[in-house]
Image (cartoon, rainbow over the protein chains, first blue to last red):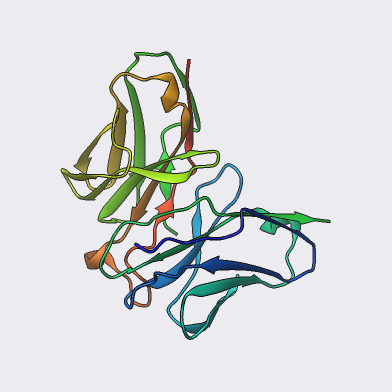
Amino acid sequence: LAKTTQPISMDSYEGQEVNITCSHNNIATNDYITWYQQFPSQGPRFIIQGYKTKVTNEVASLFIPADRKSSTLSLPRVSLSDTAVYYCLVGDPYNTDKLIFGTGTRLQVFP
Amino acid sequence: DVKVTQSSRYLVKRTGEKVFLECVQDMDHENMFWYRQDPGLGLRLIYFSYDVKMKEKGDIPEGYSVSREKKERFSLILESASTNQTSMYLCASSPGPRGQLAGSSYNEQFFGPGTRLTVL
């Protein structure tokens, strides 16, 4: 499973767009990039997954460049309720049941 | 909606006690997992199970055992609790390849709310 590197923490203000970048230089051909979100006192929850280019859902967008060595989670117009820890994970979802969580990025949104 | 429930939100035990943490999922998922989460260390996998009565060690199995007698229930057992096992324990489940829904990946994990265990 490829190792990932992401910032320890980020601050933002309500209404701003937040971009969290994850570095995964050793990503393998069959690996996907997945992001989870964890609110205080809760378990993590899946928010988005992608393989290449761009993926968008109702929560976030995921941008993956052609070389796939990094990815960016984009949260549009954050609110206080987006304060959470965001985890970037890389792995082959069709050949492994396990996930490797790093320490994540702690996003604090201020009013 | 997938629901993963854990038997307690908070638990306080004494050193040397046997501790049972229970997890139940209601989505007929094949896979179940136990993690512990500590400040600065993220989530670390203790054990997982991909079928009834089957288990595999994760990254930090020492001091723990597990039991999966029924598909929906996965128990984490601390045979003799120690203070270094004070932590947040998180249970998760995932569909697995046979339970995969169309359009989803079978390793998406659904987490319970966690049990904060304090060992005195």
